[in-house]
Structures are given as C-alpha cells and as structure tokens.
Length: 303
Length: 303
Image 1 (cartoon, rainbow over the protein chains, first blue to last red):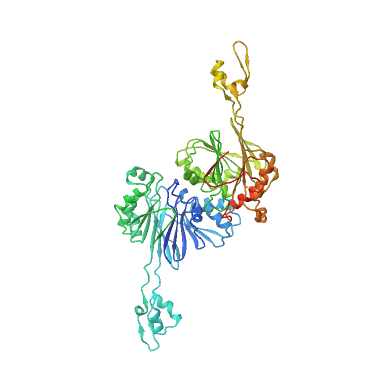
Image 2 (image 1 turned 60 degrees about the vertical axis):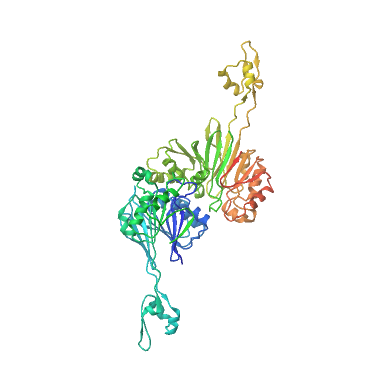
C-alpha cells in the first residue's frame, strides 16, 4: 500500500503545451484525495487511466480559476458514469455559492450527493479525519484567501510476528489489541511483552501541499519534517518583482522553506508559462535544497 | 487566404485519451470563429499554438457542458493576456445568466468587454453578418434546444487582369467598381466589357456545423451543397436504441444527411467514448457517402 502523489497538472494560470492548471491526487491508505481541480482535471485522469472509485474528498486551496474550473466538468462526468458515492468538497464558503447554480443547471438528477464543507483559510485547523488519516489546513500568503493542506497518517498498527503468535497459541480475537501494542498474558499468567510478538509499524507519512503562496516563514513549523512537500515555484529569482506583486514564490524560496522545515523531499510546480526550460527552476531550487524534484504533469511520485 | 477548420476537440460528453470535448475554429476571410467551447478549449489552443488575435466571435450550439464548460477558462486567460478587443458570444439566453456571475467572481476588471447575443435555436435566421460573411442558425433535434451554424461567404470580388488595366490606362480609383463587375468607358467613349478586364472570383465557401443532433431531414434544404459539413456521429448503427434515446446520430445517418444534401465533403465527430477504433465509424459513413473524413483533435482541414 504505497503512498503516491499523482500530478495531473502543475502549470500556473495559463496552460502550456506541457502543463495543465493545478490538480493532483494523493493516494494514501487506499484512499484518493483530489487536491485542487483546474480546467482539464478530468481529461488528465482519462489520459492517465486514473480510476476514481476511491475518491471521496476534494480539497480546493483557493478560488482562482486555475485551481477550480475543472470541478463542474468532473462532477458532471461522474454523474454520467453513474457514480453513487457521496462526493465531499472542502473549500472556502464562496465555492458552494458559485458551484450550486451550475450543478442545478448542468447536473440535474445527479445520482450522488455533493456535500460542501467550509474551510476557513486563515486558520490552521483539522478539516478532515478518518480512522487512518488527518488533514489540516495551512494558512498561506496569497492575493486572495488561500490555504494549503497537511495530510498526516495516524500511526499504523504494529506488524504481527506470525511464528510467535503460533508459539504462544494466541487466539485470533486478541490480535487487534496486540497490533496496537498490548502485551499478552498466557493462561499460566506469564506476561509476554508486545516487543516479542510484534515489530514496529512503518512511520506515518506526512505530505504538505502549499500552493499558491508567497514565501511565508509561518508555514515552516506546520510542515516541519514532512516526507514530501509540494511547494509552488511560479518564478525564478530573476522575476522577484513580479513574484512579489503576484504573491507567488520563486524556486529558491520554495527550497528555502523546504530546507528550514527540514522536509525529506521537495516537489516544485505551478510554473509560470514563461519558462520553456523548467530545469532552470529545478537547478535554482537545488542550489538551496538538494532533494528537490521537478513536478511534471501526468507523473506519479512515491512518498 | 485559405478557409480552414481546426478541430480542437471532437469527443462527446466524456473526454477520452484522444478526444477533448467539442470545440473548433473556422478561419475564413482572415477571421476566426470559435464554434462551441468544451472544457480544455484553451489548452488545445495552446497545444496547437493557435493565435487568437483574429477571434472576435464565439458561437455556442447548446448548453450541455461538453459544449461550453471551457468558456470561463478561455475568457479568464484572455484577460490575463491583456486582450482588449470585444468578445462576442452568440448563444441561447441562459448562457448569459450562467456566465455572468462567474465572470463577476473570477474575472474582475477584464480589460475587454464580453458581449452576449441571443440565439433562438428554434428558428433558422441570420445571426451574424459582416462585409464578407453571413452566419445562419440551423435548428437541430436534440434533448435540449440546440442549433447548428451555417457560415456563408458573400461573393468575392472579381480578379483584376493587371495587363488590361495598364493597356487601357484605367485610373486606380475606378478599380473597386471594376472588381465588382462594372464595365469601363474610355475617354473616347469606347465601352470595355468587364469580362475583358477581370476573371471570375473564387466561389463563395459554405460550411455547416451540425452538432448535437438526431437525424433530422429538416436540415437538408438549409445545408444543401455546402463545401463542408461537420455532422456529429456519436454512435454506430449497432447503438441505434441509445442513439434514439439520447437524440444523437449514427455515422450512417450523418452520411445520409450528407448524401441527401449533396454536400462536397463530410467531417464526422462527437464520438462516444465507447469506440476505441473510430475508423469503424468512418467506414460506416463511407458506405453511404464516400467523401467522408474522420474528424480528429488537433487537426486542420482545408475547406
């Protein structure tokens, strides 16, 4: 059960030959989460053959078109494909106001419910939880209210040592508790420490998505040590004036955040259409943070 | 000055690996007309390197998402690219109601005006005219009100025979009238017939766009003899029940319309996502009308 990030689009406002607007799918604990949904998201899914039967929740960072214009088409197509599972959309309050009339006009008699959950982009708070995962909002610094998302796995269960279970004749019904760390007491009253029965679980994965944002040191403590950080890098340092005006980051700034937050891996994206050679952005980031990866459309990254 | 049709997308409701939803650009008399604007239209334009500086008018056949979800992204990007020329949208009245709130939210301070023109899809009428061209609506038969479009060039001017103009010392100011067919009278009173001074102009081109529609014999007299007919062929004959239910055409039906209307060339499109091999649709059409061409995304057809 790998944790993967599938980048559907990592362009910025204007699409290019290579890059669609922003959308990505995080697959974690056998569930899919769509993060942002720019125009063409459903097209990229088709092009990549992505199945969406485990997709129940969509998170929208902010209400600029390149992060949400694909929603109506995606939902409309889900309807035509006879989806029945509820679809949850986590976004700022305005999205529901904007999308509802469109759904009423274009998606009459949808065979599933669309449920809106309001995010307050100015607060870092828990916005989603299930038994294996929590999602927190990350307030970002952009021209309009905007937040990123921190996905945190809950601790996984410890791995059973099958031969020790057999050796002590431990009944099946005790196993769930042992996976959670309990010791086992035999009929003779002997206590078998959990460490003899199990090995450590995999470390919980943490993924942070930060787009769109100017350089913001406030996010550093929130994303500290994540396994993977996706951070926008719309510009290079040479476009610092434009970068400041539009409240976007440069590749170097993204890398500085990654370095200061001591993350394990940085994926950059949200490139301005002006850069034909995106390796220049990668190189700028790598000067500051070596383990930087160039985000590319239609690519799957292991986390 | 060639007349061309650029197909940006010729899929139907569900996009596929090959086909985006419907959008095409007619280039005629040095102007561009966008016909329908499914999701991803602006992306296809970028992928093909289409320049849109001569695009002033968009025609929307009907208000199903696969024919109009790309409008908001396209207009938004035009704004970012600092377009200043007016953009005219010809569509049913509801489109303005739907699009206006989106423009107000996402496209504040657009540097150009978007001007809506209402089409009555139930009437065949002149909906656009300039000095070289007329566009008529073509009422179609679909689940929702829908119309196609007939583009008709006005007669072109006759070609001047330069050596005859020189021979008779005809002053420049007389030439526009001569191009329109007038004779020339010399100072001695001799009448030089226009046929000695000019050759015939190229025949005016006519292009008809018919999508989405069930088989409708009513359109035959309207599109009679056009140089090129784009007619939807969502299904093959084997899916006649589904075709009737959804009020779409089969490839054979598209070809029957082409044959009965005695058109010069038929381009088919709007294929259901179920057909992996679209040549089967082409072959079905060709059995009835030989000069059928398979519409394909990102392809330019000369008319």
